[in-house]
Length: 105
Length: 431
Image (tube, rainbow over all chains, first blue to last red; front, side):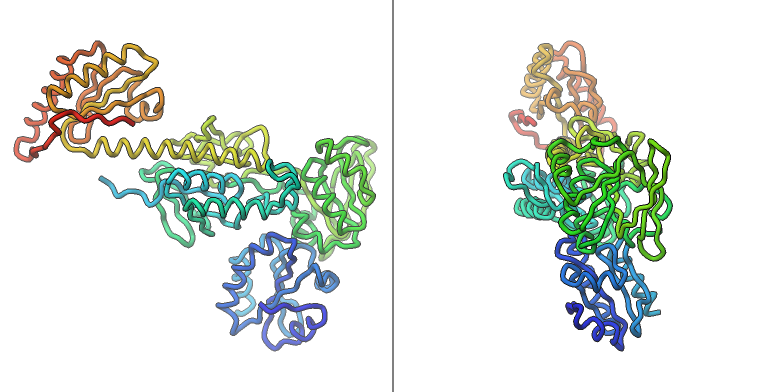
């Protein structure tokens, strides 16, 4: 998963032609770290349809706040520069996958 | 004989209780599998500092401790799987665990360590704004609240410690306390730290009544229980630490739970179902800490090991063809010595095998063999108990019973009776 920060978020996420999944995480967040293997699995499965990126919130707090992230981990899905869906409560691999399917549908 | 189960024990839950149980079980050479839904460390993994786990003078962190116990368990051969339990059959022989990825697994024993989850207050706005500023995990979300004001609901050890952690990020942490000024449920060492922290503010005599926000949390409404007044407090986040509830709904119809849903266990961590043990925060107990969870795990694993060994012993005894005497005795019951002597004499004279079963050490087996108390002698013929002897034991009396059991056997199975080579001298097996 490609790391994205405040400098290239606009270009990599909002300006992307493909839908983008953004994993907002922090090295202090154990739940985020536990979730990562599941996200990597999903990336393998969906990388041709969705771009997977991650934002380290401890270094890009203002960006996260501006994107209405209030709890970690938070998974946001963007299409054509707009947030179209998000998983920010009970975030599991399964929950993320069903959101991906909805977005692709 | 039925196919042997795939595992001796399956541990459900990857917190300190489950991990320690897997470690002890594997070290006792049990084939142990631990199934965890959300990785290593359980609830402790969301706690950054663990100050009071013995052996760490500088403290340790939840994630570190979880990973360390997992590594220790794997060193002894425990298998750890990230998977989800869908269904348990606790009564069957063998017991089975149906999982999402690994399918259905069979096991002799199960150790339940499902832990707890944070309790919710169920005030308006809490459910809707979960993940949008309502949090139950300070270490997860603290980064997002740098230079913001946040509220912490609760005043026990967890609430105050998590609040203190948040002061490293937030410019102000409001602790909402139901008690009167100066009173916190947290232990003195934590309380003192809170009072000394300049970023910590206290709102006494108050309870959370509502969480307000359109898309994300904007403010909370507090009620003063002394004056009845309402107070609006603008905050960016609300952290709720008001205790926990056991994650035992999936066990409700299967094992005994108390009124609050905690698993009821004996001193050996056995549950109401034989071969099913429990450990950790989900159990009814006095103190829920990492150290007591680990201790439960150790006890549960040792009890499970004993159960497995007894079951294996039973299988060995009952799978042997031919005649066999089982003497149930106890070192504490003098009359039982005569039973041992009589059985051994009878066994020697007839070339029959004899095994001694110490019921003082193996009370569970007494139940499974339906022996009330020692002494008793069971005559086993081709894997089934053909006669139960009690009263005064003599070698002649025992031989008489053996003869009649074998005669009966011949009458029943005149054609298919197998020739059985018994050892010339009686063999003694002791558990």
